[in-house]
Every structure is written in C-alpha cells, then in structure tokens.
Length: 561
Image 1 (tube, helix red, strand yellow):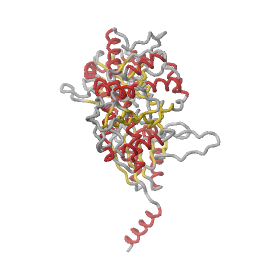
Image 2 (cartoon, one colour):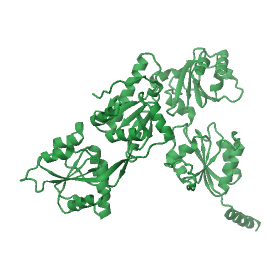
Image 3 (cartoon, one colour):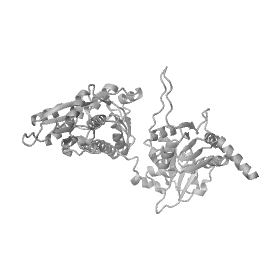
Image 4 (cartoon, one colour):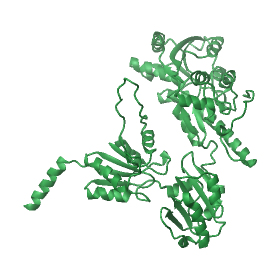
C-alpha cells in the first residue's frame, strides 16, 4: 500500500510540475555546415537554446533561416520574437564567465518549466567540455536528456589546416589542455601533440618540451578561428614558434599541433588555398536569385554578402497580361518566348490566378533564352522547343536559331513575348525581320530596391569588399544608384559583354568577364582570377593578400576584351 501511495503521489507531482527534455548538442568548431543533421532537427524543435559562445545565437538563426532581431523605431511596437528563446550560458549578467554549476542551473530551470531545451556547446559536449557535469545535474533533477556529439575542434581544425593527426608512420596522438601545470617531460617522445588553450603560453611550452628532449627543429603549427573563412595558420618550429606566433598576432581560439605531421600541410593544405578564400564578395541580385550565386561562391571559399538591388513586382496595368493569357488559351499565338526565369514565374502566377495549368500550352511552340529558363519551364511540366546554343544563350543567340515565318507551314504568325518592363527591343526587331508579329507584353517590372544599411554602403565605397559580381546591366545601374560606385581596389566581375559595357559606362574597370552568361561560368571565372592572383603572389615570395588589403592609387582604364 505504501508503494502504491508513493507512486500515486509521484504521478500527481509529475502532472503538477511538467518536466521538459534537454539535448546537449555539439555545435562543432565554427563552420555551421559541420552541424549534424540531428543537431539541426533538434534546433528546429527547441523552445529554448542555452548558448555557450557569443556567436551561437547568430549561428542558430542562420541555420534555421530566422532573421536577426531589429530594434523597433520610436513609436513602433516590438515585433513578436521568431524562433527559440536564447539564454546566454556563457556569461552572466555581470559579463563574467559562468561556472559549470551556474550553467547547469540555467538548463535545469528551463527544463522544469516543461520546455524542450537545447544546450548548445562548442565542439563536442563530452570532449573537453562541461557536458558531463551539466548532464549529471539533469539526472539528479530527474530530467531526461540526450547527447548529440559534435565535430570536435581537436580533429576538425587540424584537418582544415591540412594537417592529419595520424599517418601510417605516426599513429599516436596526445591531446593536452594547457590550463593547469603540466609535466611536459612525459611528452618528450615523438607523439603528435594537440594543445588546447595553449597559444598564450606557447613560448614556455616550447622551451619545456625542448628541455625535456624534443628536438628544437620539431615542426609546430598554430591555427586560429579554424574551419571559418577567418582561419589562419602559422608554421614554425619549437625554437621559433614564440617569435613567429607573436609576429602573426596569434590569439585564442586556436589549436596547436606539434610533430612531424605538420610538414604534410605543404601538400595537403586545401581550405586556406581555395581561390577566393576569405574574400568578401558583394552579390547585388534579386532576393530570389541571390542564394544560388552565394552557394557557388562559398564553394570557392568566399564570404558572399547579398544586397538586393532589384525588386520584381507585377506590372502596373495587369490588363495587357490578362488579355495575352486569354489569347494564348484561345489559340492566338504560334510561339511564346521566355527570356528569363522571372518571365516564367510571372506567366505561371497568372495561370494559377485563372485556374489554368500547363495543358493550356497544347499546340503552342515554346522558346527559352537559355538552360536556366528552360529548367524553370521543365519544373512546370513544359519542355521548350527552342533553346540557343550554349555558347550564346541570350536574346541574340535566340534570334540566331529562330526560324523565319513561313505562311505555308505556320498557321499563325504571332509571338507572345512576356518580358520585363525595361527589356531591350533587339529581340522584337529581329523577330519582325524574320516575318513574325510580336505581342510584347510587360509581365513584370524590375524596380530599384531600397538602399542597403549605412555600414554596407560604406564598405562598398571604401574597398572593404574584395569583389562584386554583376549579373545584369540593371544590377550595375541599381547598385551604383542605391549605394555608390565600388572602390577602385574591388575586383569587378561581369556576366557578359552587355553587363561589362554598362560597368564601363559607370566608370568601373571589369577585371573578370564570364565566358558564357551563367552563374556557374561567372563564379568559375572569378575563382580562376583569384587562383591566378594567388599563384602570382606566391611565385614572387609575397604574402597572400586579398584585394581589400591593398589600395591602388587609381584604377586602370576599363578593359573587357
């Protein structure tokens, strides 16, 4: 009876005080893309995220696609917060680092409120972290928890520096936390050493290792801010590392590797040698199109910053578009020509508005200006009948392959051309010369976006961007209009001759021009430029710098050929 009563009382207590769940999640060494799939899933479900590092809140918002909070203007209400609640588990209200017990208390408090808590920890929760102590506090409080391992900086940072910790010739590794007195004589052998929190005392550590018997010429590497585009590595030896680290201003967070494996970095360095490593690249595009370009740039090591310069909006007078769509359904046209992805989107939205689908295109020939526009059509269930050759995917290229009107073969001589309000007239003139009649219809408007924030405008004008990628003439005009001209040190990349000519007209020299009008070709051309620039600096024995590190007095005359 006593046991039954106790169980009943426990049940009553549980219902009165709901207990949440705590997930101790490793955030990895710094690169958000090294988060595990499980970690991202738990962050999506979290009510509360207890952070450890100052950058954790921004990391979570970036991964989940949540905007950064904005202070409301005077007289405006504070907007409702989006996403999980963030609690600083690294520092207290006095700005001092929290002890493990204080962090554990904050975690347990939130879980006792019945919330799903993610305790986000740098690296791995159970590897050189406070995860075990905090998990024990949860167990003591009767709160369920789980451990989600993360990529540890112990292995990840050396890997990003091109330094393997083990090889067939070096199979032993010792990891040492240097925050207390260490007897370095026990590490006098030739094991690979990985030092945590050791950069500030590396001079003393090196002396003690040499005194213990390690050769003074033993290779040493220090990598700071590893796995991020701010990563930098200093290579030296035990006898010189103190001076070299001081000259390079090495500071935490940093990982030290000592041993012969450091020599392999000469051939295995892959991250810091990316052609656009650390380049801050301005991406002036529409909001819808920027992500694809940014993804390609990241692959080459760049840090893209998207600045919307163009906003795509419906036409001011929709009646012309309405009339053209009705004519399409009624069989008024022989051809429809799509000159952009935005044109495909505009027609598709109009079809949705009328309750139509792709069956309305039956009997109609479809032309696309290029592969990307063709892919947008195929995603809608339409396959274009006419696409220009890959070496000239433009309005001019479309005209090159467009057939002449033949009154014996073509029952109708009319073409539906849904386009932007500022589109060039060359396509229409060319189609008319081929005997076709065109209904040139404004399907959407491209308008100038609002100016970017003041810090971004200042960065553009003062050369804090390493490169700008222009993907159309309108992006050139609009960027200059809303933010001013890029600094003379900034590398200018253009997607084609027309865009390059517009850049010239605005006083900009084009350093890179894409061999074909595609995002892939443009980013690859910029990467090739960066690789050649790096190789030239290395060949001259100069330090590898970014364009923003140098300030030429004047920009040479524009050259696009």
